[in-house]
Length: 289
Image (cartoon, rainbow, N blue to C red; front, side):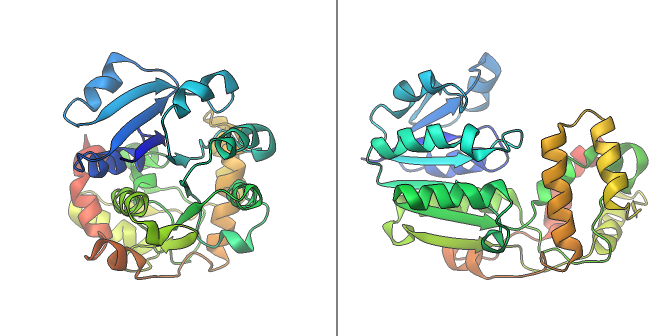
């Protein structure tokens, strides 16, 4: 029986991953969380085969209990942890000592060409440690619109995003989570890199039009410059390190490197990935509530 440690289980990828895995009664799932609150337990109460454990990437004292009995690990890099040598290497070194059968890491599409990104450095560490891996490399998340950019959409009715006229092959994080569940239960995906995208590449002008039609409110796309975007995000209190990563990714987008479309999701899940119109409809209350 596989015993899987999920780190990042309350997020946009981790939660649908756990929902998918919990359908398999032959699995044991351990959810590593910094603060285990009653609200979090309530979020998962409809799911089976779960346990919770205190876990913090920055506190090695939380590692031993989290890894007890575990043979596979899934993790997402917390956005605020941007220096992998300090933030991630102790965790990965400990994981390596546990002789894991697999570690699944949510990386970034095109990461092999971007050595300055934290994702690239983490992939490199995992390879150097020779841990059996699966690197899931998604394109931009549709759910960025309901998190990072939601304030501008709800209040200003604007996509305040520095992507110029470039196209992006957005993917729904629910599809990422479902793909990760397959990768954790099928050994064919060990030591593989999977590039995940949605079914098409779109400009933010096209997304603004879709949002306007579906939400019944005119949504504009203001195309701010990278420096203006960075200045506004930092002024809002978003950590500088996180903003710098966003700026770097949007620069990559402007250069035309985010438009690649793959059929990996369809190959793994045996059905098409969700499209942007489905996403907007599903999250309509988030945008208008």
